[in-house]
Image (cartoon, rainbow, N blue to C red; front, side):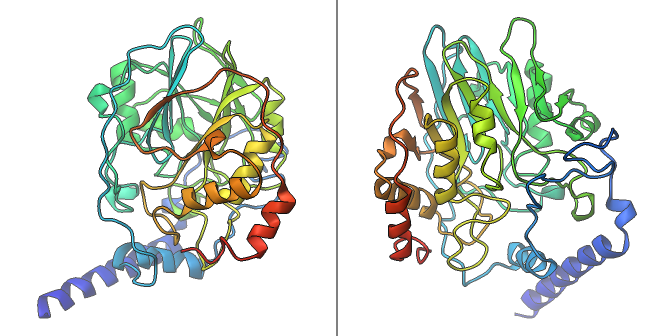
Length: 385
C-alpha cells in the first residue's frame, strides 16, 4: 500500500506540473503553424468558426478530463478493456463502378473506388496523446498495417492526436508517398515529422496526376497539439470527387450552423459519407457538444449531404468521453427508426468489416424530425449511459 500511495502521489505531482507548465510557459508550448491574410475564419493569428466558437470546454472541465485520463473515473459507464477484432485484408484495388469501404477504427476509413485507395485520419498507434500518454485503444486496427494496400490519397482533418498520428503518417509517407491533403497550418506539423502534405483553405482543391480532385470543405471544430496553440491550424471536412459519386469525410466536428453539409453536397452528389457519432457526452444526459456531434446531429449532417449511404465513425476505439462503449450506435439506430429511416442507410459497422457501397440512386425520404423529437422528449435517449 505504501508503494501504491507513493506512485499515486508522483503521478499527481506530474499532472500538477503539466498543468502549471501549460499555464506559466505558454510561449514555450505555443506554435505558429500558419501565416497569411485575414479571412472570414482567420484573424491573422488564429482560426475560428464563422458560425461561433466550438470550444465549449471550460478550464475546470478540461482539468477534470485530464485527471480522469490519468486516474480514471468510477462514475463513467464501463468500457471493455479489449474488443475482439477480425482484421480485414482489402484487395489491392477496386476498379470500375464498385466502391468498397473498410472501417479501420475511430476516424480511420479505407475507401477503394475507381482504382484509387483513400485513407482518412490514419491512426495505428496504441495511444493518442503527447509523448504516448493519452487514451489507449480498446480495439486493434481493422486492417493490419502490413495488409494495407498502397494508399494514393490521405485526408488529415486536423491536428488533434486521435486524428493526426505522426508515427502512422510517417510510415505511410515512407512506404507509399501518397498525396496527403489537410487544411492550413497542419502541413507545418507534418513537415517537422518528415512528411510532405498539401495544406489548403476551405473551398480549395488539390489533385495528383490523373487522380481525383480533393476539395477541403468547412466543418465546425478547433485544433491544438498543446492547450495554448489552440486554433493555430485549421480543421476541415473533405469531398473527394469520383466519377461514380463523391466521397465525403466529415473529420471531427460539431453541428455549428448546420449549413456546411449542404455546402459539400453542392459540389456534386455524395455517394458515400463517413460521419462521426461518438465522444459527444461530457456531462450526464448530454446529447451533443460544440465540438462533437452525437447521433441526433449526425442525422442532420447526413440529411444535409443528401442522405447518401453512410458509415458511423468516431466511436468504439478510444474512450474520449462519458457515453458507454456501444451507446452511440444504439442511439443512432433507435433515432433513425424514430425518424422513419432504414438504419442500413447510415450504418454502424464493426471495426474490420468491409462492405460494398451501392451506386447512386434516389435518396430516401427526409427524416421525420417531429417524430424524432417526440422520441427524444419521451426520454428514450438522453438517459442512456
